[in-house]
Length: 311
Image (tube, rainbow, N blue to C red; front, side, top):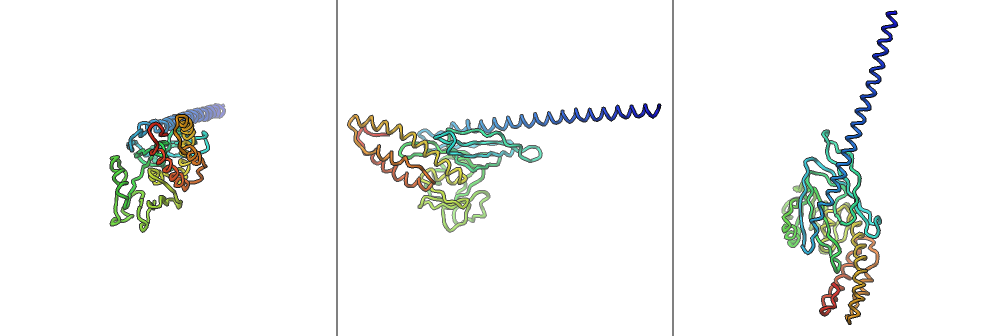
């Protein structure tokens, strides 16, 4: 009988331990799921807030604006671009995570869609700060604002004087201007060379309107130079196609205006030239051809008499 009692007592203890362990497991599992869910929600909200913080950077008539966003922890942003989604304008997405106590990054948030902005950046940004500036993009008329985002320090070697003055005028951190007497290895971040003889991360042939990075040749005009420097090659090419799609939609509005001013006796061949620019942009190289056509239209428009100007 004593043995049976001892067996019963032992069984009760074993049963209690098993049930207690199971309850504890459920509690821990439930808590961890709640923490992960809450973390994901907060991360997604942070990614969404980033897009709203970019609104004040729209340039309007200004030549450019700049700002800086800092974080308490090491943060990670992931960007993607798809010119075929949300036709005809395409879209970008951004997701966010930050370092946890174990210095590992948490699970990346849900992707937040960005449909009304053109963000030129690397597909992956890490750090405690984001440096952001914007520049307008014109193709005959203003098409959109370019938003440039980077986190790593960039060293510009032998940059043309106008570029140095333009960027310094924005009072922006993160860009250091260096000359050929200094060595590329002295740069702690991304090296950008305007001299073919130096071996940099980004090599710019400014007189030929292209640069080489990630083993790819990216063509640019005017402010697109900054988009090419600070973007991943795929994001740059994608955003160019998105900009071209917006240009095409704006052109339809201007073509309607052409018909209206022609009724008032204004005659020009701007309309036919705008229609020629509607050809699809296959790669960044096509931007050079489009820019030449845009400059021709601009000359015609400037020479038009009062009341006959298209823009």
